[in-house]
Structure formats: structure tokens, C-alpha cells
Image (cartoon, rainbow, N blue to C red; front, side, top):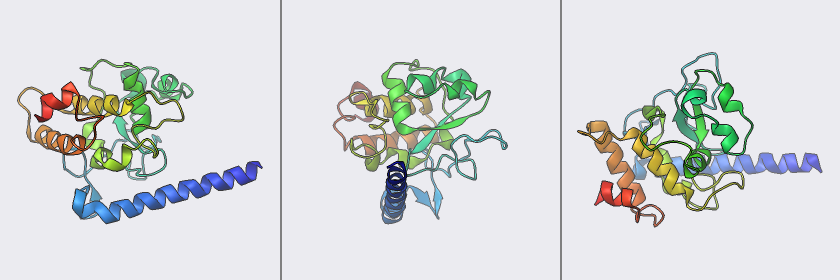
Amino acid sequence: MKIIKSIIGLIISFISLLLGFLFINKNKKKDNFQDGGAMLNIYNEPLKKCSNNPNDSGSWDSEGKCSEIGGGVHQICVENIATKTKNFSKSTGQSDWSDKRGSSNHCVCLGAWALYNAKNMISKDKKVLKCDAIPKIALSDRYVSKFSQGWNKWNGLEMNNQVKDGVEAMVRNCYKTSNPDKKSKELKKNYCEFAKNHSSLNKTPYYKKMCS
């Protein structure tokens, strides 16, 4: 029975990765998530590394980037996760692995980040993300559905409408409110274009402040 469950799990993971690959290739021109094959970040620039320790593993790819488009969708680069987001893993229903990461960064799942913020575990003004290491594809429609991995899904521990908490917390972390620079203007454009299509995002005070 365990073998059958393992095989089914592998099949589901393979299908998820395949669908993610097909999604990227089908939409890269339409949604501009890539530039010449390279993933873009939320500032419409080439995606940077999240890794700050070449001898460490933080759910990033072989280049140290948060580029996972299927599976757990590890796309949010948290800086110094043990110090800046205390109890991150434990408060999202996992073991306390995050508090043992020393000074290392980590690519966390969209759903885990959303849940962490839905629980008000971090102040709105605290900067904890390496924003140029977050892929633009995080702001895509495919990660909003309650029936697919993304902002709204996290191991059965989801809170209602946590997509709002996750997305807005990411944008707050990465948007420069006073005298927005070019990067911030690009992020604002990407956020507003994405959020306008979703009722869970386009009716909030933050959306109206940023996009009206």
C-alpha cells in the first residue's frame, strides 16, 4: 500500500512539473515572465540568486535561484530566515527547521509565506525579503486557484483568503513607498495588472491605494 501511495505521489509531482513547464512555454510571450529564456524577477529584471551560502541548500535550484514553478512552488526568498522570520516553519505547521538555518536565506513556498502573514507573524513595515530573487511568475493567475499549489494552498492548514495576506506582504516588503524608483514602479505595474483580475485582491484598501 505504501509503495502504491509513493508511486501515485511521484506521478502527481511529475504531472505538476509538466504542467508548469507547458504553462511557461505557452505564456512566456503573453505574460513576459521570461527574457530570452531567463526568468524575470518582480522588477522585470533577470532573476537573482537567493542563495548566500554556496555550501548550503535552501530549496533553490542548482544556480541558487527560487525558480520552482511546480511542486511546492518555492518562490519567496527570505533573507536570514532564522532571525528575520522567527518560528516561520513551526508557525506554518512544520518542524522548527527554519530557526536552525543560521544566517542563511531560504526559498519558501508561496502558500507557507501567505499563511505566515495571515497569522500576523510579521509587522507590515519589517523588511525580510530579497526581492530581486523573487520570480515575476509568482504574480500569475495559476497560483491563485484554491485547487492548485500556490498562495491559497498549504498542506491543509490554509486560512481564508490568505492569498491577500501573502501577495500584499510581498509587495509591501519590496515596494519603495517614498520616492518610488524604477524597480518599484515596475513592481507596482506587475502587481496591479495581476491583482485586478482577482476579487480576493482587487477590493482591498491596499489595492485601491496602489492601483486606483
